[in-house]
Image 1: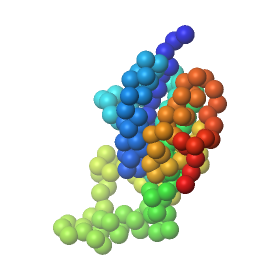
Image 2: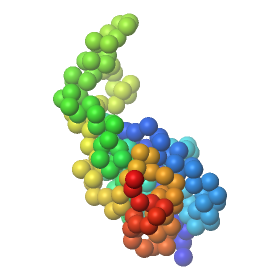
Image 3: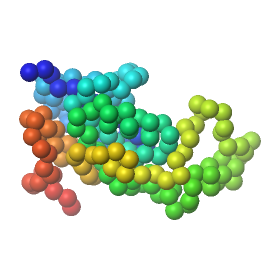
Image 4: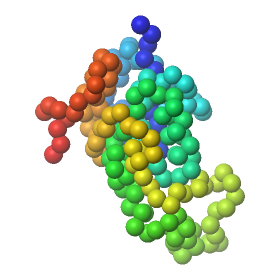
Length: 180
């Protein structure tokens, strides 16, 4: 059997989910025996590859780069895991939604609150174009597994990964991964 290809992706979020992933400690060594990490913000790979078996997607979809990336990720991945509360619900990242479209958010940040040279960045490539609404991953592409938590604790991440690595469906049940 070929080795599994595992990826992690960071959209609009704080990277806390990736920190919890690193909290898997010794399990990361077991994971390395079973899967190749082919894409992650922790390594310097520029293009999301084809043929990924499992991806953990952290963060909500907040800008045009996230939107393009999540479509690429979905096309090239067998099992997409919505990883953490921002990816699952929008969570903190979506707190800007009540302010309305992107323009009022940009105006407030770059004009009204500016100390020096108030201006909204408009040169392409400086700041990604904000979407008018921040959305959870499932509002944009189909999601196969949801791993809630802010951030999800390492035992919950491990339980889901063990189930997926065994090529089974992931079920969030049991003492180590229940809520509360």
